Length: 221
Image (tube, rainbow, N blue to C red; front, side, top):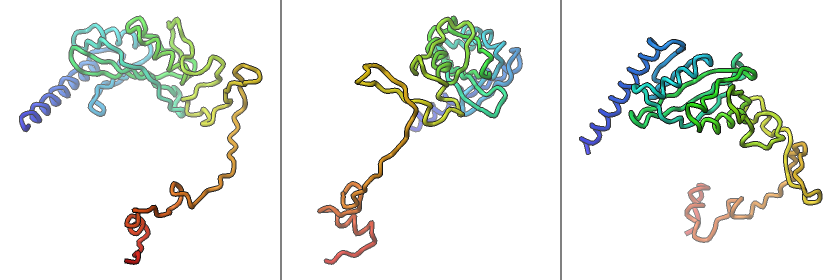
């Protein structure tokens, strides 16, 4: 068991060393890299939109990186920033068993180059990021909503999007169609039944000791 743990620790240390070497190479020898460093045990590379495609091609095709798969793409919203959105790409190298995260920033109107020609699965992720954050992707031929309805207004994962939304959608039996209505968050008065064993502290048969402990009481013997 000890040898197994030692071997796992050595493998982890070797992997960290390899990622550290890749980070150094990217930050010193590749143009257009804002930063490349180990963050939380993972290699995170930050670049600009203009340099994104060239960097992604290198990370896919260069045998030192060999990122054959783009596992996912997601957005992050920082409303206080001029370029409020971060677009995050999570890449996987099956050959080397390492992951590289690439981050670019943008705003509401500046498009990010699409990477769907490098990894065809990116179309689904770019559509999701557009739908939920409103990030635009240039060169993406199928930039449609994917999770919300076609008539949905706004982008629900933006930090300034109201938690209750703007409208609610339901199926109207009388009109036999889907209708949109303003959100109404009315709540009826609730009559709590404190004698219910689910809402009160009524002691059930066989639960006397737990009740005694809970209440700090001494039951008669």
